[in-house]
Image (cartoon, rainbow, N blue to C red; front, side, top):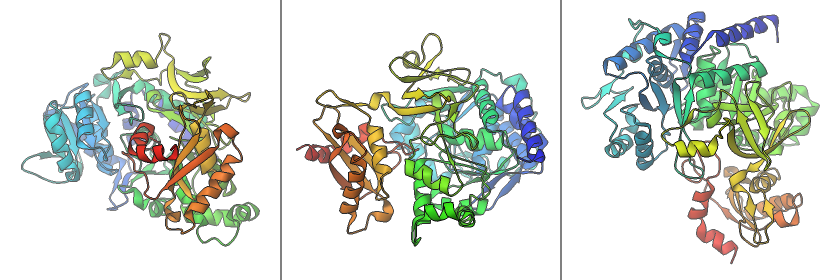
Length: 552
C-alpha cells in the first residue's frame, strides 16, 4: 500500500471513528468527496456525483416527510440494483425511519407476510413490480401507499422529480432525529428452515461491523464496486450500500440484471469484489472453456498469463476479492490463488450485521472463514456451536421475543447454528450447520455439507448437489448438472466419475451410494435462497418421488 493509499485509508478510519450513525457517515463521506462519482447504472450509463446524490437524497427525504413518513417507521423498498435504490434508502434513513428491502423474486404471499410482519405503510418500487405488489398489498393491511421511482401514474404517487433534483431545501440534522441504538434496517432471513424472520439491525451495530472490517482490511477509498446481489440480503447492503457508498466513496456501479455480470466486471474493473461461490465457479468455467492446456499450472508458471486472465475477468485492479454465504469448493479457491486472486472466504450472517470473521489478502487459510473481527467475541460451545457476542449482534427478531430468546442467551451470546472450531492461529473453521447434520439409520452422525463439498471439489460437471441420508440406511444425492455440461451426451458418466472421486475421499458410511441427475437448474426463491444456499426442506418436498426411488 502506497503512502497516498495509507492516508486515504486513515481518512476512512477517521470518518468511521467520528460517526455515531450511518447518517453521520454518509454526510461526512459526501462532503469529503463532492465531485467523486458515487453511483452508476450499468444499463443506462447514468452517473451521479456525491454532490448530486446528496441533493437528490434531500429532495426525496423532504417529499417523504411531507407524506407523513416519520421516525421509526418501516418503509419497504422493492427495487432492482439501480442508483435509485441507494438514494431512496438513504433518504428514508435520514428521516430516522427504517428502510428495508423485499426480495424481487418473492411471490405475493411471501411479500404480504413480510410487509405485514414489518408493519410497512409505504412501499417504494418500480413499475415492473406493480402487479405482484398490488396482489401482496391486498393481503397486507398495513400498506397505505405505493410510490414509483420510474413512471408517473395517476393511481400512484412517484418520486420522479425528486430523483432528478439538483438542489434541496432539506435540512440535514440526523443527530436530532437518529440515535446510535435506533433501528437502521430490517433484514428478512431467506427462510432455509421456516418462515422468514425480521432481523433488527441498529446504527451502532453496523458501524461496529464497518470499523471491524476496516481494521482487518484497511482499504483506501475512491475505488470501484459492483452492486448486483439482492439488496434484501445483508451482504449487498453492507458491501455496496453502507460500505462502498456511505463509507469508502467508491463509485458503485449498479447492475440490474445479474446475467450481465461478466461484461460489467470487465467494464467496471472493481477494486473490491465479492460474490457467492456459484459466481466464482462460473467465472472459473468461463476461463477454462476452450483453454488447450492446464490453465492453473500455466498461470502459476507464467505470471504474465495470470495477469492476462485477471484482466480478462475484469479483476486486474481488485485489492480484495471475497467469497461467502455458502462454502466454496477447495478447487475453486486453489484455482483463483493460481491466478493471483486469493479468494478470501468470510463468515457472515444477518444476525450479526453481516461479517463475523474474514480471511484477508495478508492472512489467509484456504477452507477457513478467517480470523474473527476485533469488534466481536467468538467462542465455541461445548457442543461445537459457534457463539458470537458484541455490539454487532442484532437487537432481536421483529415482534418475536420467543425466537429471539432461542437465538440469544441471557448473557448476549448469539447461537449461530454453525458447528465450528478455532485453530491455534486463531482461524475459524466451519464444519456444518447444527440443524443439518445427518444421523443415519445406524446412528452415525454425518455432515451433508462436507459430503457435498467433496463432490463439488472433485470436478466441473455438477452445479448443485443435495445429500439425503437422515434416518436412512445409506446416503444418496440429487445432482444438478452444470449448465455448460447439461447437453453433454456423456453427462451421466462424467457425474459418476466425479462422485467416485469424491467417495474416495470420504469414509465408507459417508459415501454416496445412489444418485439421480436433474437437468434443470435450481432457482433462487425455490430450491435455493437468494444467495444460493440449499433450501433443504423445499428440496425434500419437491423431489420426494425421486428421493423415494433412490431408496427403493
